[in-house]
Amino acid sequence: MVKTIFIFCILAIFTMALSNTNYRFEKPSHFPEALYDFSKNPLKPEIIELGRKLFYDPILSKDSTISCASCHSPFNAFAHTDHDLSHGIRDQIGFRNAPALFNLAWHSNFMWDGAVNHLDMQALAPISSHTEMDEDISNICLKLSMSDNYQKLFEKAFGNNNISGERVLKALSQFQLSLVSAESKYDSVIQNLTVFTPQEKKGYELFLKHCNSCHSEPLFSNFQFADNGLQIDTTLNDFGRMKVTQNKADSLKFKIPSLRNLQYSYPYMHDGRFKKLSEVLNHYVKGIENRPGLAKDLAKKIPLSSTEKVDLIAFLLTLNDKKFVFNKEFGFPKLDK
Amino acid sequence: MRLLLIILFPIVTFAQESQIRFKPTFNAHEIEIGKSYPFEKRSISIENLKFYISNLVIILNDKIVFQDSLPARLIDIENKISLSINVKNGLKFDKIVFNLGIDSITNVSGAFGGDLDPTKGMYWTWQSGYINFKLEGKDPLCKSRHQKFQYHLGGYAAPYNSLQLISLNLDKKSTRAEIRLPIDKFLKAVNPQNQSEIMSPGSRTVELSAILKQLFVVRSW
Image 1 (tube, each protein chain N blue to C red):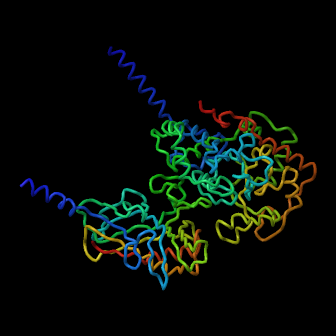
Image 2 (image 1 turned 90 degrees about the vertical axis):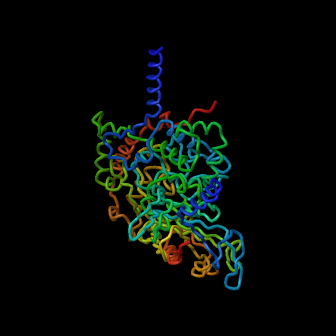
């Protein structure tokens, strides 16, 4: 009898320990330290799974038609292929391109203009936008609290079924923090697991010479704001960062995007104006509009021959992370029974 | 004897309770939501009034005698409980200090619960940051839709940081204090007829937050 009780106690302790185990954020060895403060939102498999469920659930929109994944599809590195501007509720069109989502733990601000200062608060922007999800976080909590399944998921994740804005946002953060993309060919080369082809190597050298100051490796962005000389689209009149800071010096500055997973995340630029990488390179070679706020590194147009453009694109394609894009753990969650 | 104790007990307990009470007023009367108030030859009404106070401390003889355990509180005129803050029983004080609004560190530290939960309607969604002070109502002279005025004051980033440090000296040592905020004076400074909406951080937000700071008055109670 004593033996049975002892075994039972050991099993109970073991089960409790397992259920309290926090998920350890795996930083790729060649990446810098993450900026996200995990101590304020410790990762836990059950919270990540809840965040995943929320990410794919249109319940977050007013009429339950649009989910986060509607504009951030896993097969597009969580961007929205083929759509220059984001599509929202009631077939409305937004005014910026939906950016790809990965390696978000290394970002210090969010949105093309940096209007959002923390990953936890980012989801509030599309949720509340009248042209995106047109919903209210308090109403989302109300809808979720009427679902038996969500009550169970919140209980599993947080220890009780209280559904608050804080918990919804932190769960969404946790799922998005788990979206780490670091298994491209480039990553293998950096870790001496393989080598570039001669053409990719030439492209890498061109990248280091002309692109790395803004699209700094290994994340392929320094996540600063810059004016890259795009002509103003007068149908949008989007002046970027200036709207947030109200500082004229920030006019036409946009957040520098990562160059990882470009094959999956076209079209490019804040307004999705370029469908092909060749169009992007042509802009930097001969399309830059010279103006006072232009990024210093772009003061002189980038001289690239036709061959060099092909080499550079060959390198850029080594940044595609097929394992990330097709990782089932990031895809649509299992349907509820 | 037992009867005397029963009668005296609540009185003794009541006398010992130390409390700070917020009382937003209009023309010196406690504001009631939806009620019309005479204002410069017309009637206006208040429909919503909420503001954050944070880092509340209570001082006696220049020494902190009480520090609020909550980092921030949402004072909401429609939630009567939120208007009163109970502090340690029998505690006397002669000064109250708090921030009007949420500090910049909290503003850049992600999601919080309780009074700071974004479901409280005091967080900007299109641009990060807490709304420190929200006042909404109707004025027949407002040119806006439905003659509404809406003032959402906030902003944590330089040069438009609208956080205000409020420091209030009591006329005498007391266990109870009433903090009044005369909204009619604030509306005179804004003039809804000229400006019916302020919904984002900026220089005007900072100016009006500084005006609010001057309007708080305290008296022992």
